[in-house]
Image (cartoon, rainbow, N blue to C red; front, side, top):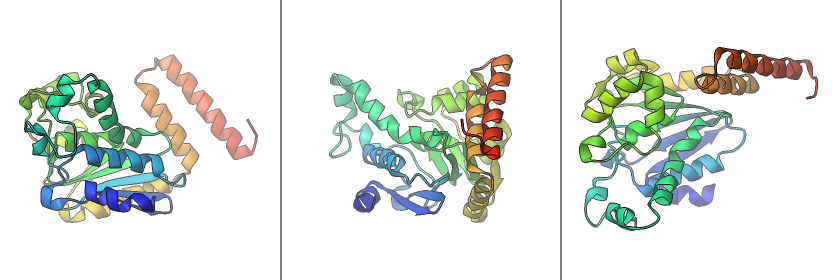
Length: 261
């Protein structure tokens, strides 16, 4: 993992691991943590290289903004230096594969063996909003401003943010937020389910740390089983969910009783 520290830092992200807790920090505050394909590759690599002992991951950001979204150079004809430009993606035969690679940095946060918490302050725009949505839980500062600006730019949100947004607020509200590109502030974010907790900006990281500690206090396998039950609930009928609960509980009881499967 240490081999990649400088590369990740250059891309704008840092990983710190302490026992069962990992902290991923967006660390380009001078650029308002604007994102790039290099950052997305670094995030994907971090997910693949997390030690198996990690149970909870906190995502935080330095500076006044969580992430101002995609680096604006991506929208110029030449694009971001060293990266495939939007024009080349549109013209070339590998567009689907390129976007799929970008998405990898946003997928692992939903893994059933982890609980992930985003601590969000200031602006979380576009790719920044979608990164926060990738996490299981969101603790936000009172100054938070979410916005999905892709549609206003003639694009769509494509970094895996549409499903969690719909799951959290419903399709009608999600459409309105995306199609207008408007700002969603802290009070509304908490009211419609985007935020689990709103705190003063000065208390944001302490609140996220407290939540992480509370999550770590429960037995790991019980949390994994519970997360899996909740993640699958929307796709199951009541009878299917009842059956899933029974099967999960029997696994827990057998484990607690020391009975091998």
